[in-house]
Length: 611
Image 1 (cartoon, one colour):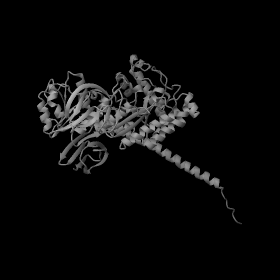
Image 2 (cartoon, rainbow, N blue to C red):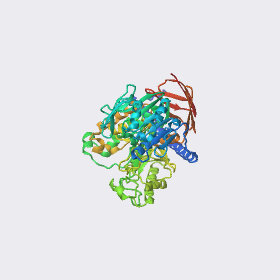
Image 3 (spheres, rainbow, N blue to C red):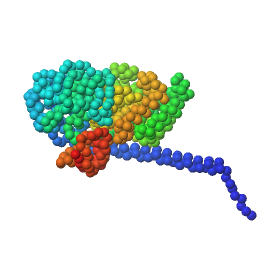
């Protein structure tokens, strides 16, 4: 008797194959998710090790001849420029001596370079001393527009000036060189950049590096004898957002100039995940037939993930548990808390390689002052302990969704954080490792403005420099300036920017996303070498740079670098008019004309320059 053969319908086979593929996909997804938790544990270990190492480490003391900054302590403007230049050089790990010329005499012969932040050149003493220093191979950078006094007229020809005229107010800047990396030809014609400038005619040997928007020379250098003079014909270098000009100018002033950078690209999403009210927005419903939660789930978030993949972006999402305004306990179980949303969005953030951080229990800035809170329509907190309680609740809420995940990064609501609030964070959240607020100066003096630094309590200060889905003149300039001085892109956006006419520029989501993609496209084109990192990973990398010493020695055409302690790959910008003949212990990548990124793969490395 023959056994009957069972023949399956073709559709059955397709169903079986689909189920198998789905199971494989789920397994891969789960593996990726589990992998992120494993990496989170590694980051936790790195944070602990770094804090211990920094606590026991000695202060970083750059070696070599100093960069001398001459300033006038009686002139507030001179002091401001001095402070900006000093901070830039400290980031570059160059030894700095600041000299108050009303107290001490500038003796430039012992200086690697001299930066002059005084307008009255007569205060410097005998101008012949400065001229002889440059003639014998020294380098002088006038970082402020000099007054046309007798001392100026004894020096002006040596500074590359043929004729000096009236002072006029001028707006904007045009880069006629790559003084800012990758930005030759950039024009910013906006009132936030303005200078009183001297009308000048320059010697044909003067190299104009930047002009005003109307073409008046703003920054130039001029060879004199064996050295070089450089002049900034304005006043804007007193502002933090213009530090890139100082960094770029100094790196073009001296030959074969090398300095460390952070090499990080960080994208924060504030207020995400967060409760999304079941609101029907007229424009969104008309265009997408969805209420607000469905729009963010079905349209906005898939677009954001697509952009991340296309433009090599990793999101650092900082969550809000509730949008209630409560600043008095109890804080547990607020009615609008969305654990399901936290889990669904949070899983996708982690699977995509991102990070979850904290924006707050709610969106009330951690301040005790009602006067400050009133500026934002917030409620002040009564005590530090109650602020700490709210943070404990937000951490508990996150751990309930992700029991094995540790958060490290905090972003202050509205970028406002008091000293009491900072203490509350540490009390309610012992794992906190990073605070990410603002880099640019705040005229209101309400924001928590930071430097990139390791605070005395071990917290990593990691400011954001730019924001928004679109690229205005201010953001474009700050990005370019920060990239040249520090090699970092640190940017933030909010999901609800598109719901705010001012922040969205009145654009609907499709146009806003188009602008976002254009910004990221240009970023990748201008700085293709940037590493995409999460906030905490970038902060750890930053701390490794800040807490290490770099010693430079030169033998003939070979630059020798030594990093102590060496923990992981380190990155440097090298400006040189020479070619790169060979390298050992590092890789070299040309990133602009005469500009190279050096990646040190060992504690000791060599770069041999050609002709």
